[in-house]
Length: 353
Image (cartoon, rainbow, N blue to C red):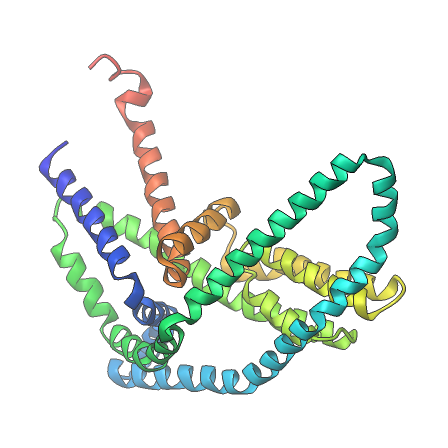
């Protein structure tokens, strides 16, 4: 292993350690970086039309955050009311499930011994207690020490500033990094960075658009069929649809639970399932192929693992960074595999060395 490789690995390890140590204050900077990356194509287009970079950046940043703020001011009170109503409705939903499940439990108890029934009760109590403990711990971590207020304040104040300066200086930053690269490996690095940029752009920009469109579809569809809290459930389902299968599955289960407590008969359940099924069909055959692309190279299992690992290591900041980092690792792994297959070790000529 030569000195350059050691230096690169040390730099990567040091950067990872620094990110871990500073994870508590990185959220507004990561959010600003993602916003700048998302809006960079718009700034480039305005610049090609003759607008200065500073003016284009100012107009885009101001328009984006005004739009987001307006949408939040209009939707958040409504969503908050629906979420609080759903929480208040939860006991009634649980009671309805219990009422419907009692005959099944009685038949189950008739086929089991008392010892087996006791074991099932103990296991259920243990899992319920563990779930409650984890939920309480999560809420405590989020709300303790005023951290939530500080993070929200930092997002509102720091994120727009970071977005503006990064968006304004984006091309300059890229050029500076290019100038600092060793000249002999610069062409290879440029090719791989271009592939990374295409992968991240297809996933981040495309998936964000898909999530918003799916949230609107689910929210409007569930509201039209008369489901209580349908707008909140549908919109939140769309927002977490970037987690493959999990987002849609969780939203479907919540919607069916509400329908179970609200409606009687089969038709309302079929309509709920129909809204989600139609959303998945449109997503699979229209939205994702056109907006995300079919050659992103991020397998759903890899995305889920990256999100879980990022959340475990860095919290919400890690969730934001998970997919871009996973895209970088995926591109580098594919490049390493190509180089390995071209090497004498794979061809059979270097095994004895």
